[in-house]
Length: 190
Image (tube, rainbow, N blue to C red; front, side):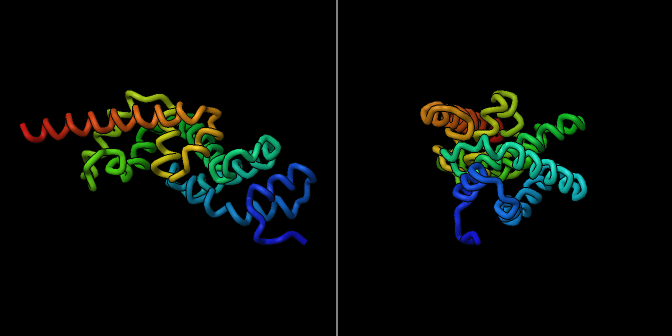
């Protein structure tokens, strides 16, 4: 009998050591609703989200041995969810950019210095411009940091980057957001 209070990381290490269907079942019970919710936030369709959830659980099962335990399991899981959903959107010619903009719109104010709130239409304009200027990896870093609230250490380990590389990319993206905000604000005043 396994302790129900065991951490996800410990559970995965047990799974890597000795495959036990009960261990994987416990992981699924803990995370299936979260995975489904995240998929829904990308595709906005329950049937597709359920299919993606099943695909992610299969990927999780197949790739469980590649989890190194250096970052939190939740960060590693989010990267699988994000990549699977983005791949689905691309295959189905959905606007990946629009989905990411919608997911990040609420967090723009958090990136702008000295501002508590940014009107949604301005957030969307800023994000549209920003997404033209940053790489897919930088988009993922922004989602992990500002939307998912993962610590820099976990982002670093999950993406295989140095801590300074993650911080520099976040700083550059924040700087671009601040510049874009100032540009839009000055246009509004004129």
